[in-house]
Structures are given as structure tokens and as C-alpha cells.
Figure 1 (cartoon, rainbow, N blue to C red):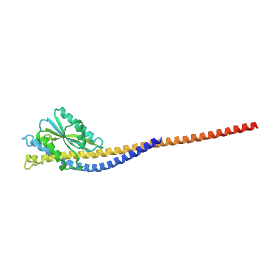
Figure 2: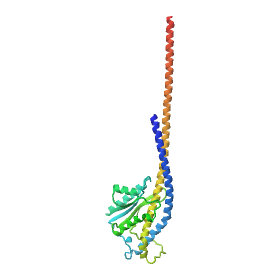
Figure 3: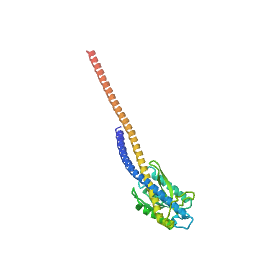
Figure 4: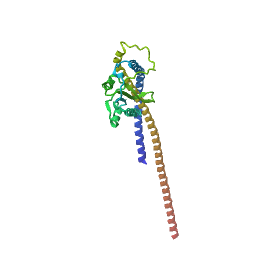
Length: 310
């Protein structure tokens, strides 16, 4: 029984230490999540407008000559995928969900007869692909929490060079779209070639391109594509920190519940041990009384026998 209570105390101490760690990680993730959320909400309108401008320019030139290969679709023989995951785990289902969405996209492309190559951002996606499906074209890890175009320029250059050289005929992005602190949705979105807006979609009539749509396209196409990749990374970072904060909060709550259960078990074990000791004491006292009574009875019989002889 002493060994049992000692083991329970050791487990309580261990779980309490884990709860302290998870609570600290929750606080850190909450601070990072607030910054990432402000960042993604501030840049989202610009990224949306940039995508609208690209679609508008692509629609203007869709009936003319091919101004730029980045807006010219071609048969897809090889699809390039940009997979954005985290460098670290302990974020609930964040990495598993986006990797699952990537695996689904790879199956769809292969079913359509296209080969697949993947550019990974984050260690988790790279490790999964190297273990199960080694189609990694390039890998990028260690991005800061507030990346800029300087940090993602190599990523965009690899994607655009592969597309312009004909190594891939299409580029998709798989990342986690930030909805709110509780909900994050893995999405797959086409990056290249730029898709023109549907004819039924009304575009802003006040767009005026100087000196011409061709010159604007050649100038801004790389920059606006870079913005789309940067926004996807911002969305993924906000989703990662939110998922990790929620996961650490759940882990802390689970640790607190486990401590309560272990404390109850420890108290029951102590009560059982105390009861057992009390029963031993009572039993020992009863045995002592019985022995004293037996000794007194034997002495009385001896005295009676002596008197009879006299």
C-alpha cells in the first residue's frame, strides 16, 4: 500500500509539471496568435484586391495574343504543389488536416494522369512526404513569425521558374485558411497560371492601365503572385498559433482533470491504509485482552487447586 501511494504521488507531481508547461505554451501561443491574426486581417484585403486585378488583367488579354506565359493555360502533365505546414507539432490536428488535404489533391492529379512535385514550407510536411511519397522538389523551413517578401522570394522564384521552364504546367497552393480562433480550414487554390475572371463577374470599371495592360502585366505579375504566397503563409501562421493555443488549453484542462482523479485515488488509498492500520490496532488490542483474560483464568484455577489440596 505504501508503494501504491508513493507511485500516485509521483504521478500527480509529474502531471502537475506537464500542466505548468502546457499552460505556459498556451500563453505564448495566445500572444503569437493575436499578432498573427492582426497581421492576416490587415493584409487580407490587399491580397484579395491583388488577386482581383490579376484576374481582371487575365480576362482582358484572354481574347488577345499571349502576353505572358504566366496567364496562358496549357495541358497539365505535371502539377507543382506548394504545401504549407508548421515546423513544430503540438498544434492539435493542424498539420494532419493540411497534409490530408494535400494527399487528396495528389491523388486527384494522379488520377487525371498528371505527375506531381511538391515544394514544402515547414518541417512537418517535408517529413511526411519523405516518409510516404518522396516527391519533394524543394523545401523551406525556419520562416519567422512575421515573414516578409524577402523571406518568401526564394519560394516564389522556385515556383515561377518551374512554371516558366515548363517543368510544371500548373501550380497549386495547399494551406490552412484562417476563419477564427476555433475554426481553420485546409484549402487548395490554384496559383499559376492566373485564371481570368468569369465573364459573368462584374469587374471594377475604374481600372485604368498606364501605359498599357501588357506593360502592367509584365511589371506586377511577379509581385502580385508573391503577395498570394505571402498571404497563404500568413493564413497558415495564424491558423497554426490558434490551433496550438486551443490544443494546449485542452491539454491543461485534461491535466487538471487527471490531477483531480489521481488525488481522489490517492485519498482513497490513504483512507484504506489508515483503516487497515486501525483494524490491526483493534485486532492487536483484542488479542491482548484475550491473552490477559486467559492468563487470569489460569491463575484462578491454579489457586483453587492449591486450596483443595490444603
